[in-house]
Picture 1 (cartoon, rainbow, N blue to C red):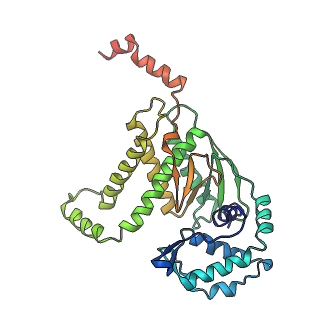
Picture 2: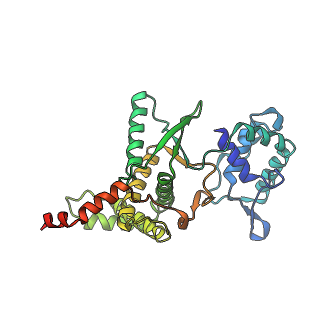
Picture 3: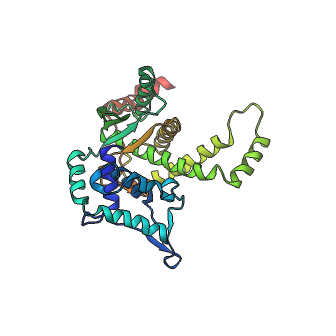
Length: 319
C-alpha cells in the first residue's frame, strides 16, 4: 500500500487527539455496531502488524474471522466489535510517533492531481504504451477546442503501478464529474445485476429486441442511468461558460464510459488525496459540490470561428 494511502486511512480512523477511535453506529440496542470505515481499520491493523513496535502480530489477526471476510453490511456483533476496539487501543500508545513519521514521508498532493494505477495484468512495455495512449485519448475527449486541456506526469510511485498526473483545473473538474459518474454507476450496477428485477427484465428485453441489433439490456440500462445522473448534476452547475447542456452531457457520458471500461479492465483511479474544498470523501465515493464546478471558457479561437459563421458573408454563402 502507498504511504499516501496509509496517511489517508489514518485521517479517517483517528480523532482530533490523534488517537484511533472506532467510529460506529449502535444497532439493536447495542447488540451490534455498524462501522462505515470497517475496511480501513482492518487494512491499518494489517499494515501496522508488520512493525515490531505495534505489539500486534499477523497470527493474532489471522485468527479473527471478520478480518478474513469483511461483512458486506459493515456490521459487527458485540464480541467482534470489542475485539476490534481492543486491537486499536493497543496501538494508541505509539500512534503519535507513527503518525508523525507517515506525515513526514507522505507530502500532501496537489489538489488537481489524479492517481491512476495500471491494471495488474499489464506486464510489458508495449502494454504500458497502449494503456498510456488510451489514457491520453480519454483526456483529449474533454477538449472543447480551447487548447486549454493540459496534463503532466508528475511521478510514479516506486515499487507500484501508480501514476500521479497533474491536470489543469478545467480538465480536473470534468474528470472529477466523469469519475464520480462512473464510480456511482459501477456501485449501482454491482448490486442491480444480481437482482431479480434485472433477470426478469433481461429476458423480456431479449425476447423483444430485433435480431440484427447488438445492443444488450445492460447497454440500454447504462445509457439511461448515465444520462439521468449527468443531467441531474448538470442542473446544479452555475458556471457553464456558455456551453450547451447537450455538449456537456455528451462529453461527460463518453468520458464516464471510457473510465468504466478502464476500471473493468483492472485500472484504479482516485482523485487527489488533498482535493479542492468542493470535493469531499463520502464513504465509498466522494461528494462533489456541483454548484462550484466550472467548465472551460470560450477561447478566442472559438469566438472568432463563431463570428465568422455569424458574419453576413458566411450567411450569404449558405443561401
